[in-house]
Image (cartoon, rainbow, N blue to C red):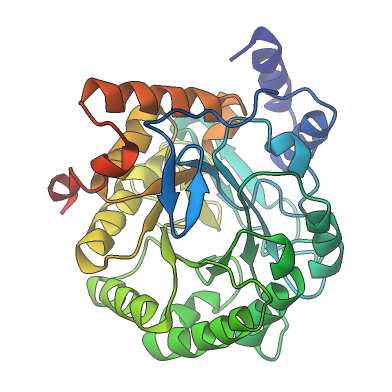
Length: 349
């Protein structure tokens, strides 16, 4: 991390987290972030769900909800970027405050509730997107009469400008959204999304993002339904409702917990899925270092994503993790990251 970035992070941590996040996006757009583009090497280049990634370290959805900093994010070192979640109509989300830093735990709690400008302005920005692998997290309006149909609507509107799309039924901040992870509801939802995808001029890889709080039978159902409906990959996992092991004074705030405390829980779900399905898995939850990215990969992830770690490590962390991952792969004798996928799964089961 540069001295300027360290100074900027210290200043942002002195103000309201959501305001600070908005300022961080503005600073990126102003050109204050990294400028080198994706970190890559022969060891890091990999193909996941038909996508050729320069490295397997991606930006998770939520950092750039409205796709306002696409050009800047393409220069940060990430191998792929996911923006959103986008809903058909604009919505304000839940009342503020709705984001808390848990600095003592290197974590965050949010209850945003899919706040975004809606798919129309987001689609317009996606149309002017830079090169690189770019995806959109699909969401549903809180007051929708048919939430399942909302995912298909956003995909139909935005799909022409994307490389992949993620169906997000795992946010804990929209009431009853997680109910869509049940077998029957998930089958119906994904059927509608895949039908919309087939109607695109260029059908996309469709990912499914799940919660870390699923029971063993629910994980088995997710793996089965994902395989049956033609999903291209599973993203494991979103935020948790658990508060196990937290020490920060903000720990009782309602919402989804992300960051370091999620690492073990999300990695165990990832490893279990890896034993149940041959679909590629994207490991998310608590990734804050190259070693943690490597652990996710060895647990079964073909690629990883991060977001909360940027609050504490800055945007330059993406490149640092990619370079560190390259060194770890070389240390252990892997010629390519794909060779390492799942080699440590047994440690997490």
